[in-house]
Length: 181
Image (cartoon, rainbow, N blue to C red; front, side, top):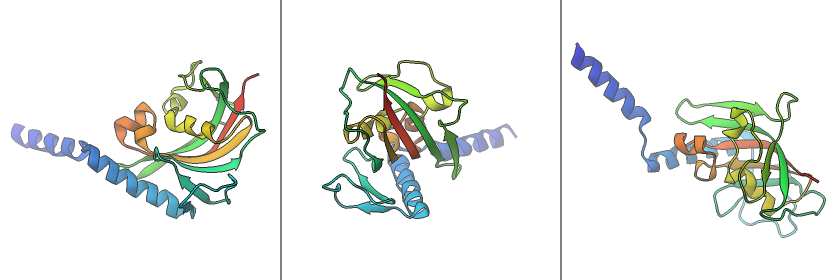
């Protein structure tokens, strides 16, 4: 009986113990499902004028897919200096469970992520949003400015520590950047 429990425990652990290559393959499939489900078109090059169609995305060199909805007012963030308030609505894709969870940072119950561009978070945030803050979330600031709005798909390799641990992508349906004055 004891050996049967040990075998079942080992078998169940091996299902969740994925290699990095397996995590990348699973993530690729999940991102493909997001793109297909939402009807996104992935462009081969970044639009020369910076204007995206409603469902057009471009994959950046770090693997983040970006769609610029509104590029903002023209003021650009300065690394190490600009304090950014970011609100986001995101769908966290749990690859192993084949399900997703929606988080709405535009809700009045949550305050924005506050960070200095090029640095870490400045203020504590609800754990759920701290788990979503990442280099991938900050990536859009290289392409837009103050009061901008983007959409993005964040792969785990540039995602939060939670994403990296689990190998899960995040689809951000709204990400608003506001610069603190």
